[in-house]
Amino acid sequence: MKLNQAQITKTLSQFPAQVLAEDHPAVAQFSELFGQHTFFLDAKGLHVLELLEVPGMEAEEGELISLADWSDADFTKLTTHQPEPTGVVVRLKDVRH
Image 1 (cartoon, rainbow, N blue to C red):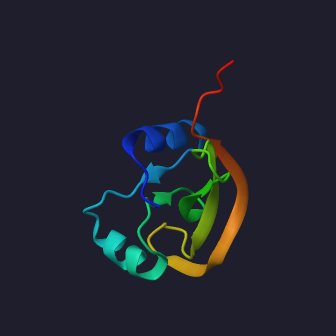
Image 2 (cartoon, rainbow, N blue to C red; image 1 turned 90 degrees about the vertical axis):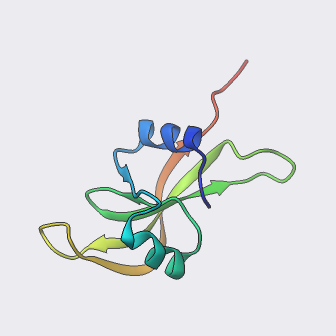
Image 3 (cartoon, helix red, strand yellow; image 1 turned 90 degrees about the horizontal axis):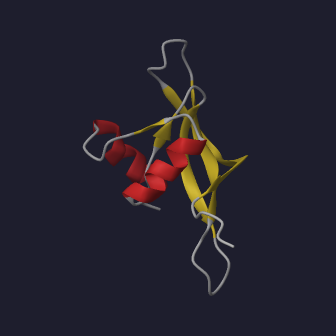
């Protein structure tokens, strides 16, 4: 899914990565392969955030899903694979008491 700016900021505060800008040439290709998402790049590869939704409630967390791994030492080529959960959960909402 496409994230709003607040969700992107929250994700980046918990996951060291960079966001691919909407006008980046690779975004169109990734969207064709994986659907409309906000794409994140880190030292391991390409990721998206899948919201962990509870029926009837707004999502408070999301899990990073790996879509592609770097295939060269210069971080210039990605090799796609089946989406894999990373186990990294990002908290999108602050806990309120």
